[in-house]
Length: 64
Image (cartoon, rainbow, N blue to C red; front, side, top):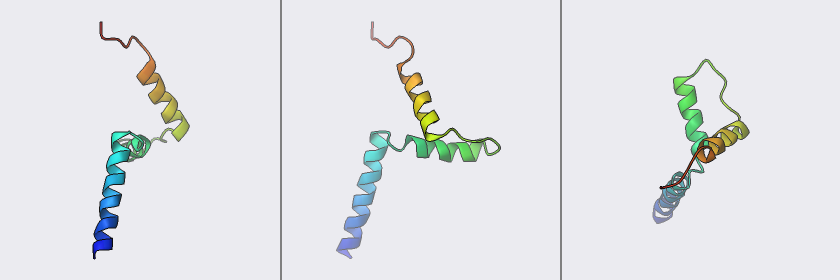
């Protein structure tokens, strides 16, 4: 029983770490895409990555 709860805790911590680092962003995008845009093809992982990089780094990004 303890081993099972330890594995469950480990899996929960792993999911939380992936969410904090946004490593699971593509999987979250796919879930959203298939539920909201079922008739269209989703972006490939590479296309998603490039679009996210463009979104993050385009434009002015400063505090003042």
